[in-house]
Image 1 (cartoon, rainbow, N blue to C red):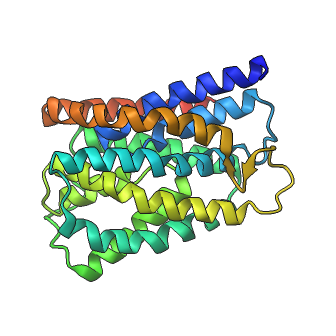
Image 2 (image 1 turned 45 degrees about the vertical axis):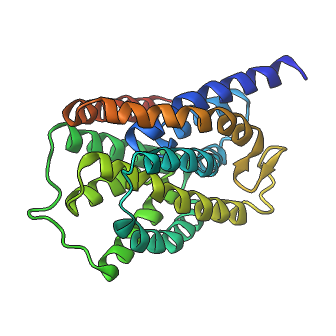
Image 3 (image 1 turned 135 degrees about the vertical axis):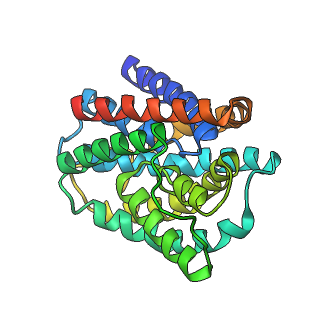
Length: 267
């Protein structure tokens, strides 16, 4: 094992700890942390620039399978997952996540990266100033929830930023308190990750620019390194979510989004 490989393992392992903590704390599935750091890491490793953004998103989505499972289990133990709200939304997510991955690889990587940065910044503003996305509370039914899930799955898979960015505001508008919205959102990360990963694997078949040890647009060493540590860190993030007040949790969440959006533009 050479020094470069050891450095990769250390970087991906450290990234997994941070991703797991924040996935459990904010219900964001880790994608908001994993994608920008992977972009910078893959650049430093000399990967082909034409595939770096898509490879980062595909790898991040695959990592959410493990962080999402760990985070959802921790929130289930805290009884903060509302399964009545979850089931129809998850049904729509299955179709949306697969379609989002297949669509994302058709978009130029630079445009996709900037789009992620702008969106994340706007979400941070919305959270910080508590801007209401709806003039009145949503009264969800099965068809509305399935449709919402398909949109959540499509955008989350396409941008690789985790379901919480979209599903936490949706569940809040549906009447759930913040901790329940975060817990239910964490559970939504599982179908997003599974079917998003499937889409990125399919889309990356026969792409010659991808590095060795890639399965489609999933870089396996990064998947392994991040997943090994993030699973253990997620339960501690869920504990932190219940430790902070809702007002403090919102400010921390908004600040993280601002930092990530600026980094995405500069990298």
